[in-house]
Length: 302
Image 1 (cartoon, rainbow, N blue to C red):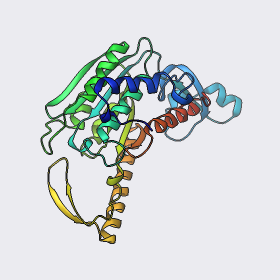
Image 2 (cartoon, rainbow, N blue to C red):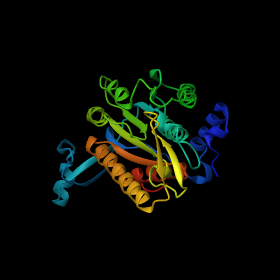
Image 3 (cartoon, rainbow, N blue to C red):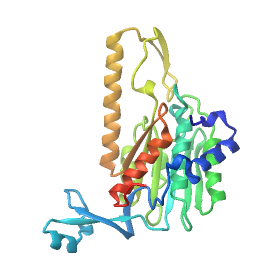
Image 4 (cartoon, rainbow, N blue to C red):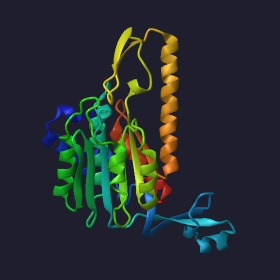
């Protein structure tokens, strides 16, 4: 079983994450992974039939003429990229009832992005929202800098309910003026409001991967009698009679609807979407996602 990051010291956690994504445990990540996402770049990956909504500037006229069916070109992201990790450190991320808290899951997701996009020339930067504003780490190259970014993510302070003075939307707005094109990985539970338009704005210019973190108690309530619940963002408390079956059903229905709304908003923004759960093997879920991207890009299975 994968140890939780909170069971390790920050230094042990960094070594553990590095081991997971650089030494290929159990053959999970064997093979070269050219990109987390197929996207704008100079290296041709494959062609596929055109579907409504594809960028007509990527039409492959040779394949279209050969097959008499409209085709578009898919490319891999440029070899040298600037990667930004936008990490939500709001109070709701300090929650977890399964194998880990969402804050630990978020660090794991950040590590996956960092190590899987690491190659010569790529630069990694980060924006971490928290109780004292947004901490911005300028993009740089090198393994030492990568570990510095992850150490900052591990050491970010916990947030008292209602105490945060920066939001995910604020962090995304600060990326609007970034030069060039790059990959932006947004790691959050997306439970705040107001992030939809800023995410759409960032996705107009950059490839965006939205990593959604979820805990099972956010999807359904257990039957444990009278339960005191606290809104992590506002600190408001409420007594919930979980023995009531209809209430649990309504909660589950509302939770499914909320997650569907989040998924639709991410897709409308033009971002890729990866959902990770605190009660699942998140490393294998990341691997499955990467392998799916390889297949879409014509790279085959590892």
